[in-house]
Length: 219
Image 1 (cartoon, rainbow, N blue to C red):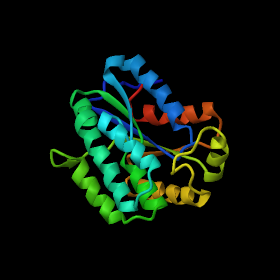
Image 2 (image 1 turned 30 degrees about the vertical axis):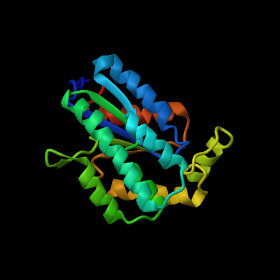
Image 3 (image 1 turned 180 degrees about the vertical axis):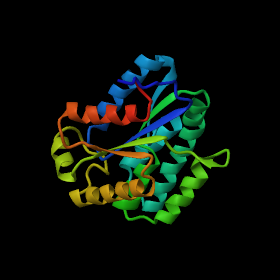
Image 4 (image 1 turned 90 degrees about the vertical axis):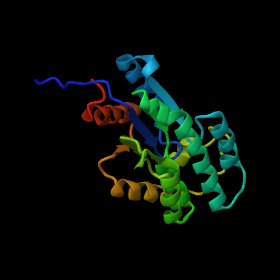
């Protein structure tokens, strides 16, 4: 059997996407541990959106809890993202680190574009303004989308915690979010891997490992 050669990725950026209850947070922590075991703890960074910097974490609280119109919401999300990119993501990638992010811009297109029905052209413009680095659009090399029926996610979250304003949305909202993720995947299929999150934890983890190993990122 031929053994796959795995080398240290130079500035590896992996994002985890999906609605709350899909299990992505559990598996991102496991993948962080796997990367640290292979590349060293000081070469692996775990972050999230909205958030990841002191300023972005303050904006996160506003975004998740305060009432506002869709455009204001989009502005705040991309403002948080801009600070996150400048302060954390771009420097980490420039150092050749492995960066795993719990949600990135695909979530904005899914939640604000799909769920809220906000103008995708405006989101695309904000994306270009916010994520252009050295005349190139900064995107993850790999996006793992944890796909789960909205009804199942609602059952998993029932009584787990006090919901924020997104988690409190009706099931139909999350169906539209899923459509938003599907559109993003259709537009960039080489970057996405859809993970079937409607199965037991070991089976989901097996799919995550398969996706990462298929890219040559882990032994």
